Amino acid sequence: MNRLSEFMTKNKLKVEQVLLNAITSLDCPEKLQEAMIYSVKAGGKRIRPLLVMATAQSFDRNPERALEAGAALEMIHTYSLIHDDLPSMDDDDLRRGQPTNHKVFGEAFAILAGDALLTLSFGIIADSVNFTPEEKVKLIGLLAKASGAEGMVGGQAADIEGEEADLTIKELESIHVRKTGRLLEYAVKAGGIISGLDDRELNLLGDYAKHIGLAFQIRDDILDVEGDQNEIGKPVGSDEANKKSTYPALLGMEEAKRKLQYHIEKAHESLQKIHPEPDLLADIADLIASRTS
Figure (cartoon, rainbow, N blue to C red):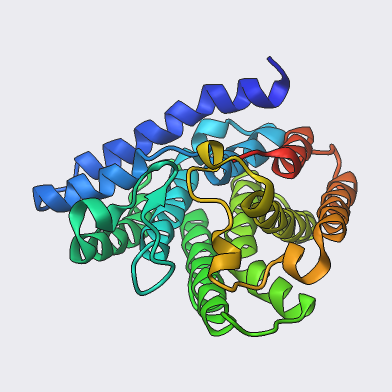
């Protein structure tokens, strides 16, 4: 087992336990709780919370101290998937090989489950005993900006507006910097804040996150054409069917793969300017480039 696999195996279950503990401790309607748990337990590599923990470990901090900051991010990510799958958005029936939340619980409870996960994400940071008051303010502010109108939500809005439009590569990248990149930026910067990094180091981590965010999306687009439906957990070719602008559609497959490699290389360059170089983050960049699901 290599270094990254060992780290992920060791910490993935810890993240999932924090998520489930936070949800099961809520005093709320049973069906709402079940809908929240359903999507949280749907699987995934937990790349985002593990990025938070990997950043902390890279700078000699206990990664478990970063658990709640990572769990908050995964709640945001999960809520966004629930809402993305709704008939008013992507209208998807499958997510990671399982029926989407609204197919199981209905649209109303899917929306409410997403809303509940969104609000709980900020509560888990606010209630944590592992962060100082100053860290809580920084983490909550950073997460709000990354997930809101200037970040993920704004990116999703621009993505909807861009459907069936002839986007340029610059416009497509702008969408994905916000839709995917901002939450990854939160991940590494949250780990950096917990580790006491200075502004220069945090900015370099932000550059790294921008590039792995774009690489993540390019890889997604490639998998939608060349992926295995059993691995990616949804039908292949849905982007083309929905007339979405994608990197392969705009650039061609070979150029899209070159663009993917370019962003991975730029991510590595940003890390190389930090001392000591965070090797776990370098491994995660390489994982994003080669993932099959």
